Length: 325
Picture 1 (tube, one colour):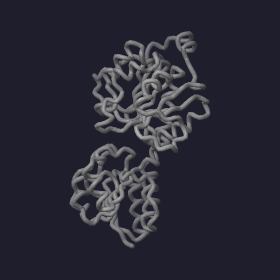
Picture 2: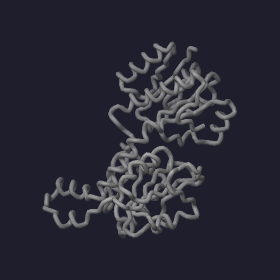
Picture 3: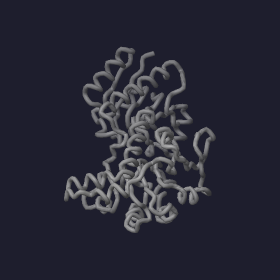
Picture 4: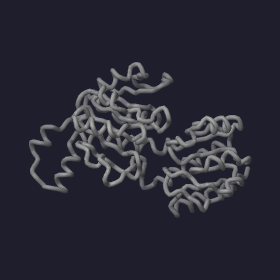
């Protein structure tokens, strides 16, 4: 079975070469869009060549997908799929029996490790130590040694429990604390304590650490607002590797300034890039990184491997990994 695979993923040249050669070895044709996305976070531009494809890999334009009669599978190159999570798109793909997959398996481990690193960094006062090294270079023995904490036995609340949440729960297990997750619709197979909307205030009040993993959607925008920051245990820490739109950032800054939130680590913000004058950069006890949580040096190789394994499954009629529609 010869297939035409269209991609607009911005592969590194050497990774694209391997990807194309492997498709050719399997007897498939590759269309590499001239309008490649600059990053996995960028929306794809329209490309008429998609009409020739059986499979789209990357970030295809939604309108192109909807009007491409040959398409049999859409493989997204991201863990998040917010712009595709629309009622009209879901209905059209479902009516056509056209599967949509994402790349959660590729990004779950680096995102989870990024969050664990952030949690440990705040616990051990590492951001303060780095600022001191870059600035006054004072000997902050008492200030940082006797305010440091450990994760051992701490309570962690995960907002959202997809692939990243599952992996983070696994990484936190050796610390012996309690991991609870919030989900709108529990499935019963989570392996950790689950709370829904009614139990969220109590869960926020009990947690030493609140980790936001929520994607962007109309239902999640500003999910963490002033009321929910106010419901947190005083001095608890907040982390975000979901999407910046899910947090009322003004409310977070106010909670950091008052000490209600004892510290924050954010890998995602709104907007991105975050302007240099944005108050998050100078908010007290707030540590920022520039949406790097899912990244690794071999990210393109892992995305290609993930896609090619799913392609093998597609050819054999087997269930696809990371199917979301």
